[in-house]
Length: 299
Image (cartoon, rainbow, N blue to C red; front, side, top):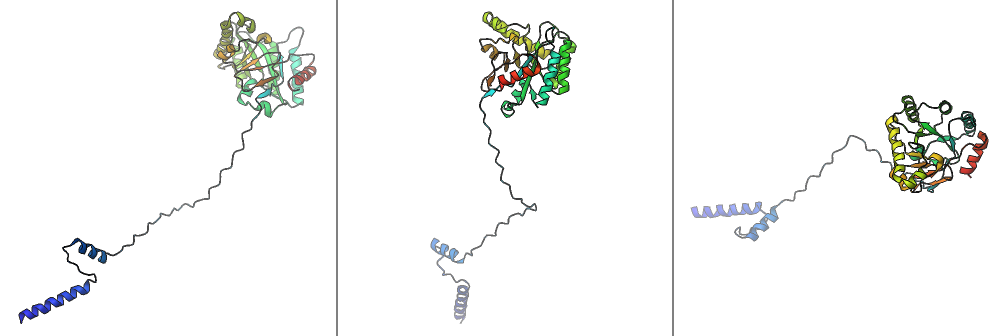
C-alpha cells in the first residue's frame, strides 16, 4: 500500500514539474541539453534608451561666414610721387617765400603730402592715391649745429599746414646739438621722416669707386648718429649731389630702403629690395615749379 502511495506521489510531482517548464527536458548531463534549455527559457531584454541631456541655452542658427573680398593686385611698377627738393635760403633764393606759395597751391589742389616711410607702411598708396600725392624734401639739416633760421621757418610753415617733410640730415662731428636733436625727434614723432644725407655730405658715387667700404661707412655712421641722437632709425638715403653709387650692393649691405637722387627715378618697382626715386628743384616761382614737377612725375 505504501509503495502505491509513493508511486502516485512521484507521478504527481513529475506532472507538476512538466507543467511549469514548457521546454523539452533533455538529460542534463549533455552540453546539448543545457544549451537547448537555456535558449528556450532565456527572456529577451530590450535595452533602455539612452537619454540625451537637454541644454537650457537655446541654440542660435550659425551664420555663414561672409567671404572676404579678393586681394587686389597692382602693377609693381609705380609712379614716384611728385617731389620737390629744397635747401635753406641763400642770397639768390628765398626758400621760405617759395614754400609758402607751394603750400598754398597744394592746399588749393587738395594734395596729400606724404613721406617715403608712409609708402613703406602703405605700399599701395601710390596706386590708390595716384595723382593726389606730393613729397617735400629739405636737405642739409646739420645734426651738430642749431637749425638754420630759414629751415626753422620752413618747418613752421609745414607744421601749420599739417604737412610732413623728409629731412636729409648730415651728421658730421662728434656731439649733436641738443636742441636740434630734440626738435628732430619731436618732428619724427609727428610723422616727419628723418633721412640720412651721409656723415660728411660726400659724393658717394666718387667715393665708392675708390673705397667701397668708405661709402658704406658714410651711410652707416650717419644712421647710427641719427639713432643715438633721436632714437629714430633712418631707412632713406638722400644722396648728396644726387649721384648714386654704381655698385648697389653697397646700399643692400647697409639696408637702405629708399635712395633719393635728383635725375630720373620717375618710377620705381615694388619688387626691388631698394627703390631709387628722383626729385625736382625749384624752377622759377612755385606755380611754374609745381607744373614742371607734375608733368615729370604724372605724365
